[in-house]
Image 1 (tube, rainbow, N blue to C red):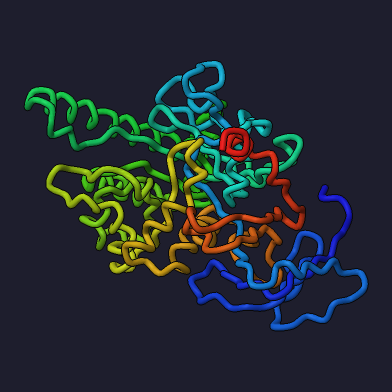
Image 2 (spheres, rainbow, N blue to C red):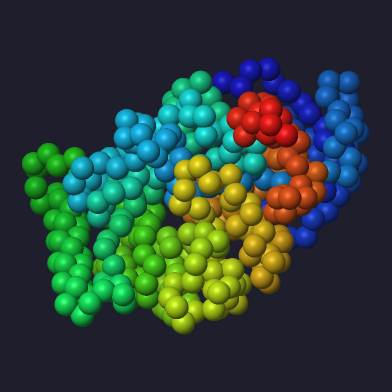
Length: 396
């Protein structure tokens, strides 16, 4: 798939492993699609392509964007280019993989900002469907796909009505949400029985849920409020899901419960307004550090398909508010990889895939850094097709 078997030697790069450990300077040898060796000095052989210009530059694992409709939306204002949601409340059989647009003009911009893998995520309804993990390269989605069925995404309505609604509206909203949660539980109950063989009738939705009920694959509940997070944990405990919470605005309020059930929190952007008028203005900036201090696994994501290019900036803001740079890097590299079940992606280590970005400066500090080169599993990626860079060069 990746053409000629290349052996590339990167001289004297600062290696940011992606596991929270400090950076160290060393040589790195890439053989084909794999990191073959890391050492203070590696003797060059005639067949190696030696890159001396990497001396003193910074080498990072590929950034991984999760929980994003990337590849499913091209232009939000044009309905014909939006394929991120199915009709109906319960569509677990829906696969993001089948709708992924490998020719999207958004992808070159993401690659140029260090994002080389995405979890393309369905939206809409209560059970929206199954996400897919994609490389941001390839001629077809069949070439790009890594996991066609990665994570089941659930969007239950909030049990916590808006405080700005009238008491009557709040009551109606809560009753409607409670009814939706009951419908979700009933649907899962029927699916669980079906997966145990209680019915021989074909049901594509129930069949799609079986790997998740058997804990073979993870489930993500999109929940912001503490009450919704508690409900998601109760439901997931009943059905044995491998759960993560996406959103987590009030995760701090239920941190002991999240820790007790070992539920990772995938924060939906650090750049957003506080969750309520009584919260401090820097609430979301400080939230990653606060959750880390309570022993939780924290991952960063961005719910936009286009603004994914700012993913490293989200992590950089967490650094500005107390998270160490290497731990913040792990939140967008190794920890997402572990959550998705990618065993050889997300770290710079011998035996791992050579999916790397070479950077001048700190990749988490967008204004002062520049991504020079990138490789996806040993294949160098062309960064010159970034339409944003073309516009900049045209009008600067």
